[in-house]
Structures are given as C-alpha cells and as structure tokens.
Image (cartoon, rainbow, N blue to C red):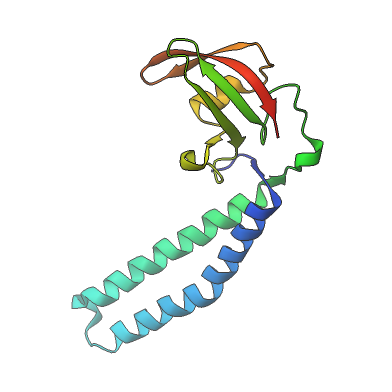
Length: 157
C-alpha cells in the first residue's frame, strides 16, 4: 500500500502503539522461539526452527507495512470536514432506489473500515461512488453484482 492513508488521531495512535509492541515484545518473542528451536540440534532438519524463521519474516513484513502506513498517514480532523458533500469521515445516509432500504455509513480509510460498525472504506465501490455527492444526488455504484443506485438523503459528521 503506497497511497496516502487518511486517518483519525485515535487510529494513528493505535497503529503507532502496535508498531512499538511489534518492535519490542514481538521481536523478543520471535528471537526466543528461534533460540529455543536452535537448541534442539541440526538446523537442516529442524521444523521448529524453520517455522520460527518464517514467523520472523512475517513479523518483519507486518512491521514494514505498519511503518509504511504511518509514513503515508494524513490526519483528518472532524472539525474541518465540509458536510455539504460526501467526503472522508462524513456519515452519509443513502437509500437504495430499487429496494428503498435506507442505511447510514461513515466513509473512512481502509485501515478503519468495519462494516459491522457502519464504516466503509473510501476505496470500496460504494465509498468511491459516493465521494463528492451532495444531498439529493443519485450515485450509480458499479459493484461486482451490477450497477446499484443510491440516493443521498443526509450528510453529517
């Protein structure tokens, strides 16, 4: 992921905390597992050692991914958000023009997306399709199952 990540302060802080944890206790745990496996003898036929080294590689990749995400993070403050149109961190109430079902989503970054909490990614088909729309607009969303139309009912924080 090399693009800009728009994040809220709490999400950025939790990512930084996780990075510190991975670099300290996480690395220490991996080093301990490798040392234990190394004590068990011949490294060429030691499955525990191979597994520990693979876990180390995955762990370092996770650290690199988090460092990249933090380096490309841009903080978004809810006080500066324009609610006249759909943008990141706005809550938008939409109505499916076919089923008449109404839902409210908050448009968030990929790292914060959680459909169970009503948070959809700005890069999702619905998120992309709603960006820039104003109340009353109908957004045509090109989803895997075809084109869906949603009417923007309300935009807020």
